[in-house]
Length: 136
Image (cartoon, rainbow, N blue to C red; front, side, top):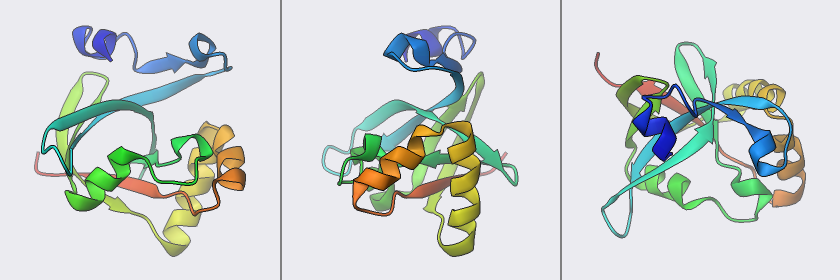
């Protein structure tokens, strides 16, 4: 995250998974939520996709049976800050449902196939989150 921030996204936007023992290069954004207990900003990098001029992220937590904290934070407070490369903006986060979720899940699984394994072992429906820009 530090390199992503310091380089305005030039270093880190495209994450090389080899650095974590994986394979492939994936687009990442920085998501900042408000901690639901601390009320402090919480930033983390996430793989993303795009659909209908929105950004899409997956609350997989690597296939764990519980939702990640960042997802619980945005359920509590849906306004988030996002950085994609050099672009920074506010967004409203919402959980996709039904047919929209199915379509976006397929898009994201094509970008990052391990999501399919995560879903198989999670024991919960992994949320698909749509980030819609607010304002300009």
